Length: 239
Length: 248
Ligand code: HEM
Ligand code: FES
Image (cartoon, rainbow over all chains, first blue to last red; front, side):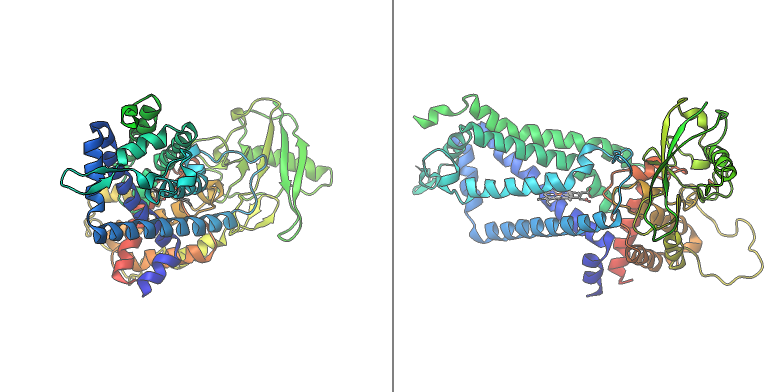
């Protein structure tokens, strides 16, 4: 009980919550990118992988609940900590000078985070719930089925992704969303090691340098998909 | 050389404050920033005006009393120096220099450029010490301390509690200060018995004073006159996590 009060009631405790949930989300984001990149192996690889993810409802929902809880706790701690931060500094210096040494990413974490939250919502409605009205293709993604090799039907994720990303505005929003996520992580990854107490005097400089590199890798990995589709990748499956 | 000063003037804690502009008399570029203020104050006093109130004591960078925000940066443009170690030669002739008090809700302005930093004292009273029976001094080296731990403890112990970390942080976080104090004692054998009780108590006191939360921007480290490393905050977080698990 005392532990929970301290964890959710103290400054350092809330930072631990934010960083631990951030870690779970980062691991997901890494895994999700590797999974998504299978699109370049062709329809069979991607659709088989997608069917595998959907195959065990219990595990699927357990993972979804953990992730949603993490997003919820992450956003809650972000809002709480940020409002405390604003209260602690009621008056800024003359001319609002940029704080010493603070990077752009580090100063805009709440903003980048909130836009990423909006992006996550859109992404879930777009490809998970598959709301027709927001995919701007005039087709329902729910109806995209193909025959599974083992008999029965399965969802044609490959076709959905090609159709979805051929809408330039949708792809643009993905670019912005993922771009802001990676801006968030270019600072967040280092902050995470700091908040979890995993950083030391020795490895600190290395982590500070590695964080933006990892963020760039994530960015390039994710945006390669909508960019490739816009450039014509996979258009043969539409005929 | 001469400069123009834009200085925050505030007659008392509850009075409204605002900027006043003063042109300095001829200055020697090798004057310290505080000596320049002394000269300006001499002139103000001679003309029957109230001198600019600012805090100072040792004037050699070891006491932590001085603390002005110069052109938006606590302790001014120097690296690893306090305001008293800043010299007029760091500025251009004819420049306009803005001088403000440290800004943070837990550091209320008392007058002009002087803020009340008693919040730091109250945090120290909650754990910035070791409880030992005093007696005859112990033999030197009777208590072995590994070299790396001694070095790190000394790095942390350099903190002079000036409050620039709080003043520089966009969140007015005191975590660099608290982490230095917690680490300094937590790294040494004398500090071990109270290590986790200390970190829990000091963080609680810090939160109670209304300081903000670290977002790892590094502003504190950049302005610290003693170059206290940001990694000490990670150490604070680690010790706090262990304290949580221990139920402290
Ligand atoms: C996939 C989504 C997200 C991931 C992977 C992620 C990851 C992270 C990580 C690793 C951190 C560092 C934790 C720390 O400060 O110690 C962080 C910090 C933060 N996140 Fe997120 N985050 C995500 C979404 C969001 C959202 C939706 C918000 C919206 C409010 C948000 C707001 C923040 C804020 C304000 C910080 C604190 C920044 C700081 O300490 O400087 N994040 N995030
Ligand atoms: S007056 Fe003592 S540190 Fe500046």
